[in-house]
Length: 334
Image (cartoon, rainbow, N blue to C red; front, side, top):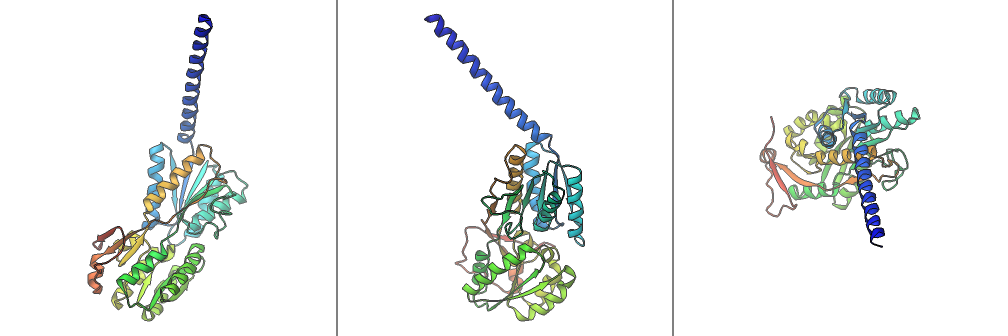
């Protein structure tokens, strides 16, 4: 009996050691799989919000030891560039493509689908993935595609505008008529403005070359302008920001980088954190998780930021009861 007990203990110990080694082997294999992965990052165009997303993605991949290649579309030809880059990534058989912004994600998704390739697409900063046709639903993507949505806090933005300009009647917005995320956000903005008793005056453009004339037509009609996460508008913000400043019309940014560049204030998303979340999702998919079953994530948390220099120049005083958990004062960048 003692012999049997000893034998059983020896066998049990051997099994536990084997299991431990198997676990380590599995973990090592998964780590090696990630480290040896061939990952591409496709960023729609160079501007601060998207740059921050890409930096967050890099942070996550760097921490995991994953190598990656980055391609960024040019401001003047981003749509064509992204389509070309995406097709090249598919042809070169990358293991995974991370696409930053709605147009880049749509290019990557269409390139993979048209080639019938089995390459997961992980998107970042896509405002409405369902409307863009990237996923069937946020909870169940259904396609080999998932990621993060930058659901800007439009309700928070309207509340912020009302606090800084209590008497506001007309709010303007510029948007690109071909950007799916802008169309989706515009509908939400209309609803929030109606609830707040504000008249929204929207001015659509087909490309950035129309921005100066569109802004010139819009500014005399409004008490303030608010930005969406519209890539053409944000990338060329200086075009209408100068006009608005001359007319004494505040411009509200959709995130902190725009406030640093001269917008008055924003209910802002942390885009570096959004990128890091996206990068971690990409690592999960590289590790074997199905993109089709991995729920997409909408990040809606925002913090308030105000540019004190712009507020002073416009003669706007921040009220004592200014709401929000975080108030950050940023001096205007040159």
